[in-house]
Length: 588
Image (spheres, helix red, strand yellow):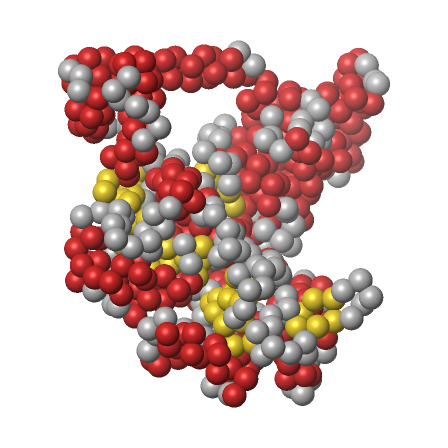
């Protein structure tokens, strides 16, 4: 059964969208609304709009939109019911027991997987100190990890047996299929199920809410792969979670340190650098960057100094910058990674290295320089052209001048000459962007279409009127009687027709008609588009005339689609008027 509408209305009434969004986004008030950088895509100029009086948000960059429930669903990758649970807990409400159903079943399944992971973590930690975990404990101690660190990170060991965890959790009532769903077991072609992790040091992966959601395991022999990670499951997505962020988010250091692996991160924490994190078996993603930007303003990339580390840093820099983070890059000499550097030179030397970390622009210029032989004039010119292209993307004129000067000094040319090259590159890029915008502006009808192709309008004229009717109903539910017998069946857009009927039903049943109240009835794409519709200007000051005009357009276009002629439309309208007039005369 669905959650009662009355409960959802009260939940939304108690949840202030500005307070909720402010927990993740720095908002600035402008007039009667708020603006900030979107948490769902990387941007430096705020395009994320929050309207407190109507309790919904809309990003004019990526298109995301909706109410409080949608925001939690998007931010935390939760189902509708789970998002409701989060909001209810936040405002001190209890979600009523609806007697099961698909959503309740999915929630129960998620909770079961989290419990399985917790029990698995306890088992791995126990085995680390057993006889069969001696090799793993010896490895961790040789890496310099103290007992307190082993406990804080819950490190463990997976025995060199095919069914150690299967048997351990079977004794607690979990079957093999449960472990398959949790990613802790695998099955072969013959259907045999066995432990995924064997003879490995185990690193629990914990989300920001403290749940064990997966594991990473380092092999103790020459087996491949060296590191094995949990697959994506119903509770774990490697592209949306970061190792040790549950601890790092509480750091007072103010800057996140990005490393390439578990051991680097753990070693940094042990040395007192408690803002270190690592991505999970994959390169840094846009989702990772957005997640980090919720907790930090600055990021220091401390990847290995080899070719792979340099390439990973180059890929990470633009992602972090688009998420709004200031980016610096650590340059280590005499060690290949942070763990090795601290062991060789000590904590204070690493702290000094962090303070002297290189601005990402200088780092990128240095990487460009390494591609060319600057003693050769043709290669020097190529270096300056590529450097100019990179520097031209910097927003600040002052910074463009500074870093253009750095490139000029490197190549031994006049800074003014480099400034001219940078400006030429900037103007060229701006000209291309302007041309693209002009091409878009020449097709205004395309601008009115929903972004998802599955929601495209077949009749733009009718759809615009349908949007207007919905906006009026969202602004003032008391206008419904003026809309007469109009129903969503007469709409040209199935989505707009569905939304109109939902709003009509909610008005008739004395429920909220805020857009946020439709979160359960609309898909994410549908809600994004409806937020775009709702954000467009509409006035109720002349609502009677607007309703009359909109209704006329909708019904005229509906008759055209049905094949009837306009004179038939007028005849039908006249008969309806005469019937209504006769009825009024009889009752007076």
